[in-house]
Length: 165
Image (cartoon, rainbow, N blue to C red):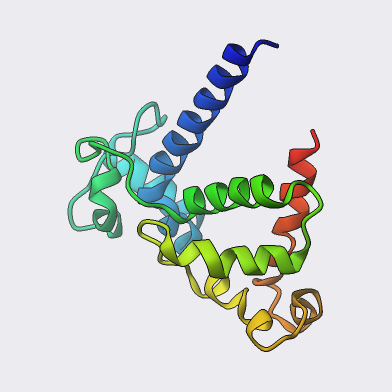
C-alpha cells in the first residue's frame, strides 16, 4: 500500500468516526436512559424512520440539548467524549507503542484528557484515573469498582488489540 493510500484511508476513517459521533450525539442519552423504544418513538415523531440523514430536531424534547448536532443545526463537529478518547488512544500509541500498561492509560488520562476541547467526562470516565492518585494499581482498583466502570480499565486491552490488526 502506498503512503498516499494509507493517508487517504486514515483520513476517511477519521471523517467516518467524527460523522458517526455527530450522528448519534443528539439521541445518545435518550436511548441510553429511556431505551430503544424511546429512540424509535422520537425518530417516528421526527419523521426520520428509516434514518437516512442526521437526526432532525423536535423542539421541546431532550434532544434539544444537542441541537447543534441535529440535521438543520450542524455546521461543524462539536466536542465529544468519544472523539476525545479516540485521540487519547492515538496519542498513547504514538508515545508508548503497543507495550503500554494500565498505568500508562491512567497517566495519559491525567496528562491529556482534561485539556481536550469540551472535555466533560461522565462519572465513570472521571473516576477511572483516581487509583493512580492514591498509588493503587488500577487493575486492583478495578476489581472493587462498580460493574459499569470496569470496561473503562479494559480499554487499554482493546486499544492494544486493535493496534495489532
